[in-house]
Length: 102
View 1 (cartoon, rainbow, N blue to C red):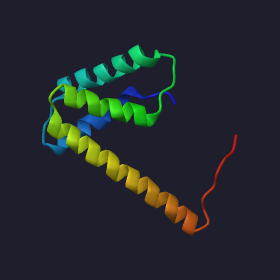
View 2: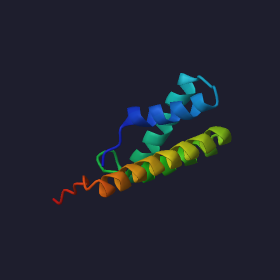
View 3: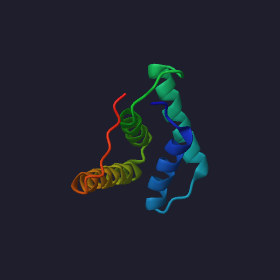
View 4: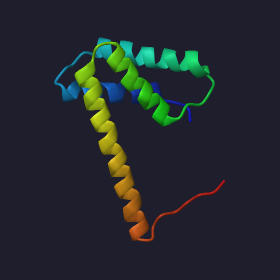
């Protein structure tokens, strides 16, 4: 899956906002670091799994000293995972889960 720089920015921004920090310049810089690291590791045309991008965001935040923000990002990521799992279980329970096989 190709990654979306805007979504990376928004995820980092939400983590900053959870700590009541508004700093678009730093968020943009961190986003650029994530994108550059992805490009360096797999190339700009390659696809990257969402989990790999999320792991990298955590890594970049921590490497740059944003430990509290990294913690918020990790907590947010886990809550989203649980929400997705609950939605899937609900679909299974209601017999509405559709699986596409390609």
